[in-house]
Image 1 (cartoon, rainbow, N blue to C red):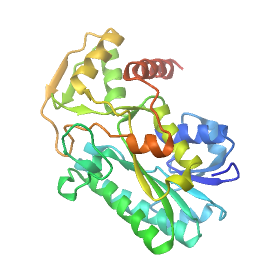
Image 2: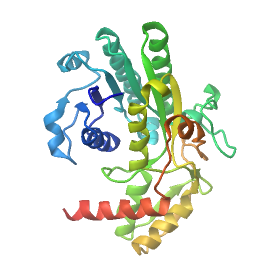
Image 3: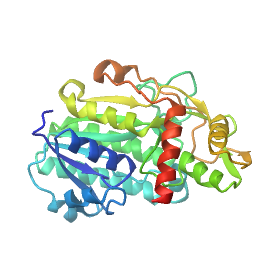
Image 4: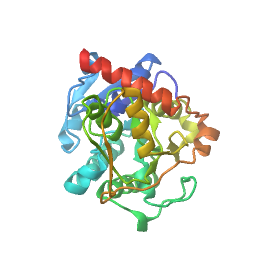
Length: 308
């Protein structure tokens, strides 16, 4: 898509959304943000953001009509939180339906949907390809909400000539995240030399540095016509055992925290390493940040955030 493309970005105040917003503006695109919350990280983005709730259709009426592309990132995204409160998964389904209905009624032709590696469940094996989704491996309400979102995107594409790209992200980490996700939670606790808990001693996951994730999205925007109506894994393509990652963080933070392995929790995936060959071939995607460099950058950002 060219620089005249007008983009609606949902979830624009979140971790990925904030960085996508910054990069798209830097690249010269016109971007309208949409989020329930104001942007804490980059307050200047609030001037370009409509504050609203995607659960309320009427809030979308405040969005201008001449949108060329929607990037739909907004979601309740913590897997275990949605095990505890499955109504949050229903919210994901409803908000995605509202966004797709908005696209239909406003004749918006294109959408990028933020999927998740959770849709693969516990497949096992060396690397997971885009075709390896099986409903029988749906492990959690969050995974179900993302499967439902993908199905809705496919259905609206089939019925209403909506072109799409689905990106399945995997454990994105780095700046703009002070949540209880694995890496920021361990950084906070290890700084205080508190015990840290890892749920699944043998758990192996694929961590993606924020800038690599955003590069994948940007490539989807720029090569939309080539990549449309396809699904891509956006990840590092490398797995790391969570206990080993905990050890690495402990060394880098010079912490005395104890790392305590506990049983895997309900709804969580034990192993995932992405096959990213399709994104490499079609989008020219290539993750550039090694885990060690990404961890260094994350620690540096969290250090700045804590002292600023």
